[in-house]
Image (tube, rainbow, N blue to C red):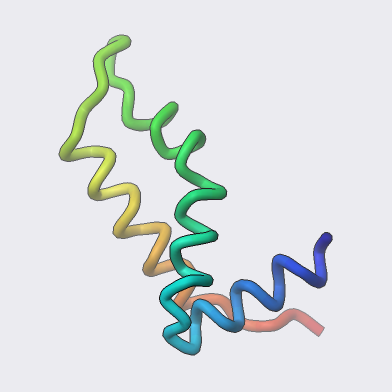
Length: 64
């Protein structure tokens, strides 16, 4: 599983749109959970968190 995720990250980092979408879908439940403020869904916060997910893809580097 780790190798599959690592490959997915490398594909996403290389601008593979499908890989980016897969990662976004993978983390959507966690992002939704963290976009709740006092039990209310905050759309702006959700969007900002998704932007951070995409940024993290670009910052990823393989660990030896």
